[in-house]
Length: 166
Image (tube, rainbow, N blue to C red; front, side, top):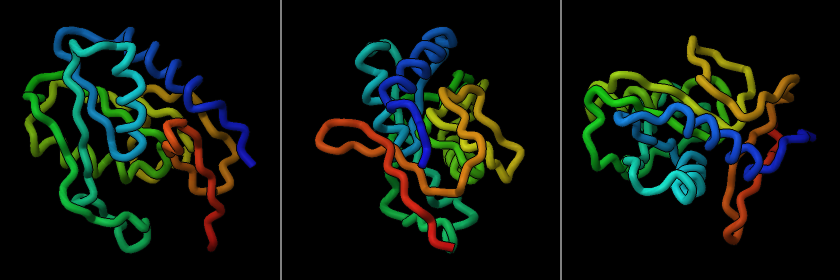
């Protein structure tokens, strides 16, 4: 079993790091569904002066047959210009890098950002692509391959850990 700190402790670390990176061109974009939950929490403290959005890269996944990701109606919601902006992409758990790659592909459908930073709560350190988080609140060494997901259970955030059958 993993001894991951609470989501709230990790979100606070993430929020502190985001706060130190914000400039006049910064916007925050979450990857559903974990990134959406994180943005909901940090927007309470960072305020409304920032642009917040969601990016769903499901259509750009290269591993749909094995990842278990279901393509739904497009759930991206970016109602602001990202051209020449600093985009802080936010996700709950970084694993192989495939979700991030797909989200970046989708992000470019909205414009060409000046910079993209990736901030995650948990880095599982198992990347399969040359993509790494710019900041992770927690690194999970000796990962045993369990599925880890940030969930909202009756208004309380927690990590759901499931054994993956091989």
